[in-house]
Amino acid sequence: MRFVRFRSPTPNSRGARVGIFALANGLRADARLDDTDAAWLAENNAWYSVAYPEPDPGIFDRAAHPITECWFRASAAHLIARVDGYLNLLDRHGVPWERAESDDPGTVIYEDSVQLVVAPHRAAATAASPRY
Image (tube, helix red, strand yellow):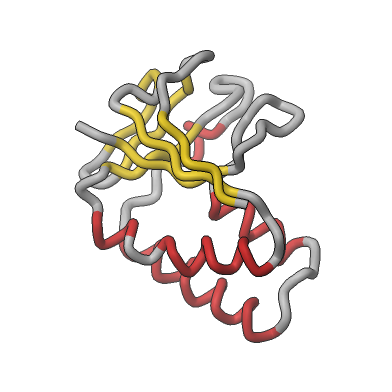
C-alpha cells in the first residue's frame, strides 16, 4: 500500500512538516488571501470536510502525540485530484511544498478507507519531490 502526503519541505520549530491544508489555512490566518482566494479556500475546505471522515480530534492532542501527520491512501484518487488547487494557491503565494510518498510513514494512530494519521518515524523512508 502506498501513501501520499503534500507538506512543507522543511520542519517547523516542533519538528513537524506541516501539511498543505495547514499551509493554506495559514495564508488565510495571516490575511494574505484576497477575497477570491479566501472564498475558494472556504469552499474547498468545506468540500474536504464532507468528502472524508474527520478523525477524532483527540488524536491530535500534542501531549499524547507530539507530532502527527495525515497521509492519503494512494487509492483515494478523488481526494488527491483536488489537491492541485491548494498547490496552485501555495505556488502563487511563494509557499514551498513537496509531495512525499511512503509505504510506511509512521506508527498508525488512526486509519480509514482514504487516510492514515501517524506518529511519523524519526527517519521516515519517504520519497519527496520538492516544489518551490
